[in-house]
Length: 258
Image 1 (tube, one colour):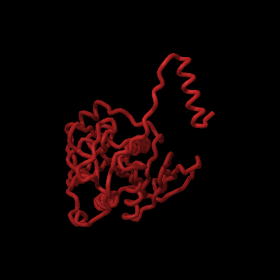
Image 2 (image 1 turned 180 degrees about the vertical axis):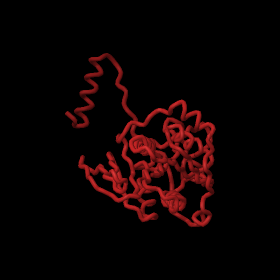
Image 3 (image 1 turned 180 degrees about the horizontal axis):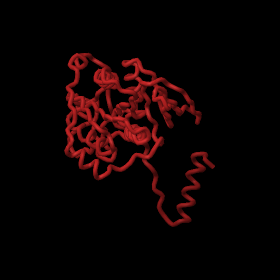
Image 4 (image 1 turned 120 degrees about the horizontal axis):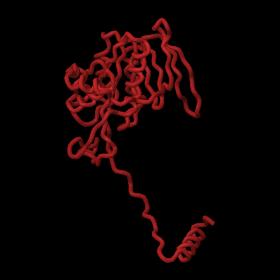
């Protein structure tokens, strides 16, 4: 059985983010830290758990992006993936979901994967499109926001419990091969083991150039990015506790809140 896990590298939100000069995306230079998309960590862990439960399973991790994405694929190897595949997309800036999905589907089409797993969304653009778009291009059945999955004993069908709005869950059965997008909380991603860390340092990634035919198309692009507008400033009340209480009470009365 073969499982493909799609992982993405995103900007660490703890880093100082700046909008680039074109106001189309955030800058990649400067003191910026990068890490694996957290939703993809749950997808990768689920693939490793399936391998541990079934035994004869190969887990491949794949990412689309510039050279720096190789560090995220190395992290995938540390977390248990057997192989790392890097589709080298060097255009920089924003890569739309439609192009990401097209590049992944183009690679996976003849690789006979039984299961493709993606995180439910990307943290940077908050879109949930790559997984379903891959499934559509490959003609695979797809389930999204999966919080539990069970592979049948014949390894030909999978039962997925999907999270819907309003606290409702839906249980569906899909034939394999299929694609699932994994919701956070389905498992607890593990810390890399020392043996996997050492293996990842020595193991080479499979690097595949992006299909030039796909790069010539003009997919959707962000129109403009801007910083959030500053909210109204707060008011500082000074004085003794009694004076502060009186001032606060007067303000609440003035605003008809009391």
